[in-house]
Image (cartoon, rainbow, N blue to C red; front, side):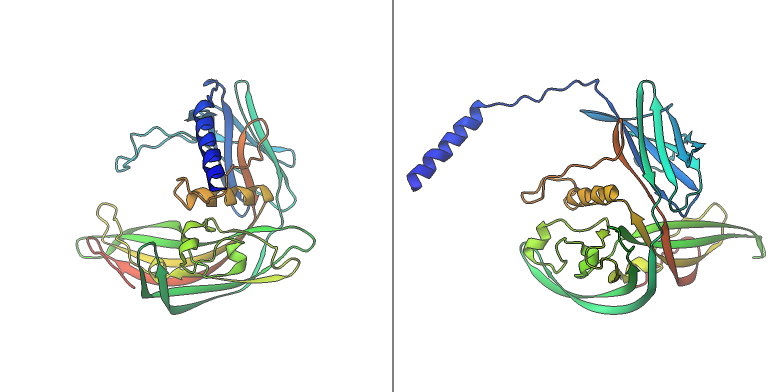
Length: 361
């Protein structure tokens, strides 16, 4: 039997050497690509366009982009590129172009995003879903002992976390899909003073950044992915880094979820850059927990991204074959529109002065 196996293996090797597959394509065969993830709770929106070739992706300028809501057109304008002298990547050519438009959306609206350039035309029709229901959102600070097992060693350490819990009500009679994300929202008021230290001018800027979180075996939020317990096998499996999940574990009912944020991610710990002449900045920071109802297409898109992003788009021997889904006709891409439910918690109020670095843990 062993001898037969060796003979078969050798035959496969020789066969693989003899059968060379040539990959041939037309370099001028291009497809229009649309990416647009719309937040129905806002009025300003962006559509991202590219022209995709088999060997490259290029920005698509000069296109006609229209969003039609219940038959009413909202034309998008091309957003000019702004050069930032401090941008490390400023010498790289962008392979996409942004188009901005304004519109209000409500559940049940019939929406079409359409882009035209020359003989190329791509579009997507989508219906705005219902708004999600999130209740009993609460936070608690805890200290956990983390057991970490890696390829060559293992260790134990303590880490402070901000636990967030919430209840999500499913839409009865429908297959529902969600994302749940956390954002750090900061209102920064800069002050300028005169020679005697009196305030003479101020300017307020709002910024927000997405915060990654741990699920610690929350079955709903992990959505069937590997639990994050640190075993060797789970180190190799995809994780739900894009936080998309379905209602399969709380169909037509209420699901209880919990996720955890590292304490440093919600503490004042960054160096603040100051406009010229500003003497101080007063920062008020909030934690926003945002629940969005998403389409099945966008849910599948996020699952495909999970497979790739887990490995930094590298090849893994056990990652499932990945194809990016598309809901765009006449081209390729993904369009999604979601009403967002937000619960906000005030984190801190702090004052910072130039040239100082603050770190809290």
